[in-house]
Structures are given as C-alpha cells and as structure tokens.
Image 1 (cartoon, rainbow, N blue to C red):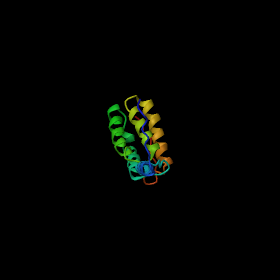
Image 2 (cartoon, rainbow, N blue to C red):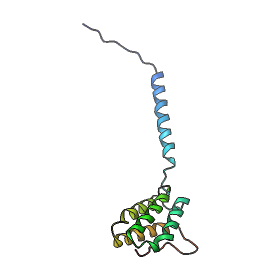
Image 3 (cartoon, one colour):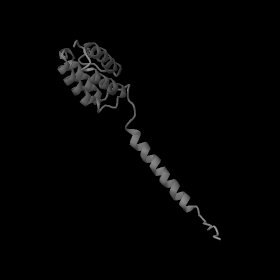
Image 4 (cartoon, rainbow, N blue to C red):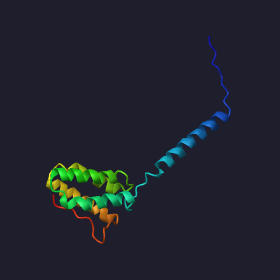
Length: 131
C-alpha cells in the first residue's frame, strides 16, 4: 500500500505567485490606459476625419466618390480615441455603397458626432452633402 506524500509549502511560493499576479494586473491596466474613451473630445485624428469629410461631402454624389471619401475619413478615424466619431465613420463607410438615402443618414450621424465633439472649420460646421 502506498502512503500519501506530505508536502510542506512555506510562504515563499505564495508570495512569488501573488507578486506575479500583481504584475500581470498592473500590465493589463497600463496596456488599456491609452484606450480610454474620449468621445467628448476632439483629438487630432478626429479633427482630421471631420475636416476630410467636410471637404468632400459636397462632391460625394456617386457610389465611387462616396466610397473614396469614406475610405479617406476612415483612415483618420481609425487613429482617433473618440469612440463615437470612430463608430460613426465606420457606419459611414458601410453605407457608402448602400445608396443615397443610407449615405445621407450616416452622413448626418457623422456630422452630429463631429459637432458634438466641438468640430468647426472656419466657423462653419460639417455638412452632410447631397450624394
């Protein structure tokens, strides 16, 4: 018959494990620190996305021009920390080939996100354009 082996653990393995867990938690917190939602603010990338949209919205009448504009806006919006503008830009891109009505709806939503973040260009705000 086999006898159970008794192991005696001291405090050291538990202390080392606790420190390891603490290091992992701190690393995760630091890694997510730059992912803070700043939806109420207009960072440089959001500003450029809104400016790009405003500059091309009036000419975005065809599917091809809407797709090209949505692509340029998305390049900037992917870099913003403003989640609302990033989400509205993604929706704008999805609507670019769905027709004029869908484009106008998403253009208005993107315009509102830019305005809500405080975007203006020379005193005028983003225009939704007429595809």
